[in-house]
Length: 352
Image 1: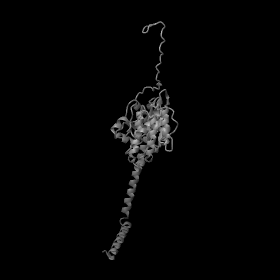
Image 2: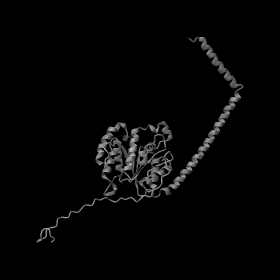
Image 3: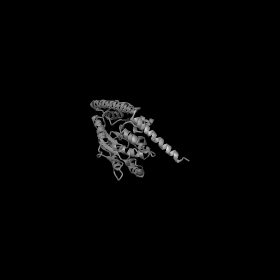
Image 4: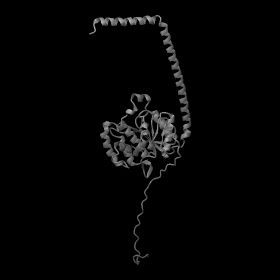
């Protein structure tokens, strides 16, 4: 057992060491310590100034590059999406600036935005799974073609949304088909709407841009994108697949490349990579221009993945698209010819 004398000796040792340190610091080592600290502060200040200068230079170069792309964009995009109607589907709330920037490049390419849709949290809320299952049963009467019986709720909802945005009236190609309007009404109404519509949808879309909400690196480090649950990711992929299947072309407009982002999920799956088009970095002017060019290429039959990350191509190659055919598809009725009256005096089987 440690006795009281041990504690006394320990305390005396501590105070002696403290006294020696104070004496040395205030005496023979004072100048050495002060000079060392002063030198370190000067080095750190110089490094900070150099980093600030480098950052200012990089920001100026980035600003110049963005200005160049913005100036070149009209020439790159002119006529790329002439007469195309494009529905914009946000997979969550977007900032007004991001939404407007993407739409500006679509319209610069000649497209008309036919719908602005935001997918609500109710689309994937685990507490509303029974509600979504019941809704799917109501949607089934208006969906054509009907998904496979084992497709799953996510696919059935995605099909309803895509058909609601793209299905036209065969006799009036410039009008949305009645079943399509009903699908959008069912999806956007009730106590737990699955989507919100910025404006009523009147025109069927030719193509669809699916926009993922942009996540910053700081937000990602606080809540990694990889932690987004699998059900939400599967539902988002289903929306993009249905958009491609039911339109002339669809593109994912994604944010910066981060661990677990939607672009990464698609690029990690060979089947999805070969069938879906993605553009990352759409918070920049380069990415926004690429969205319009990628949609042009996808409508023209070219699938790709565009951006500055791994497995991506820097810029889409523009495709010459044919004009849009909006000819009404009217089924011709075969006229019914009544039987000719018999000729008086004629023998059956002979011409009168």
